[in-house]
Length: 127
Image 1 (cartoon, rainbow, N blue to C red):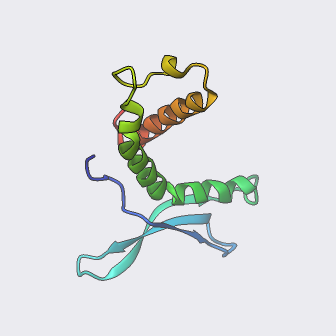
Image 2 (tube, rainbow, N blue to C red):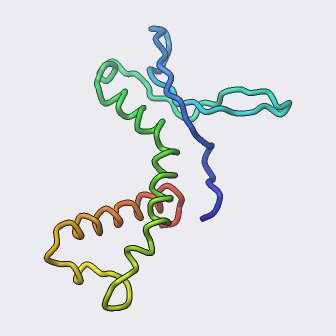
């Protein structure tokens, strides 16, 4: 896999409690200045609006965004490390859904693999 193009994680979730502040949650990462000093970089801002200011989804969305680098890394490691398992079939060739039609565990496994593959592709522009 190629090197990630996004700002490296971990990303932090920061709540801005100042009522005059135009946003509610910020996602930040450690960054380095040209002189080598540690700083923080804002990755995203989840804005408060009068209708959406206290909705539970605001914090949940911010937490999901903050977890993105670790989720992408975990999904990529999982897919790379389990590729051989899914590719092995006692009958020869890759394991396909029709090989395990009667086993709901494998249906869930194939669905999970498919979702992970598409999510990683979406995050890394491989789609």
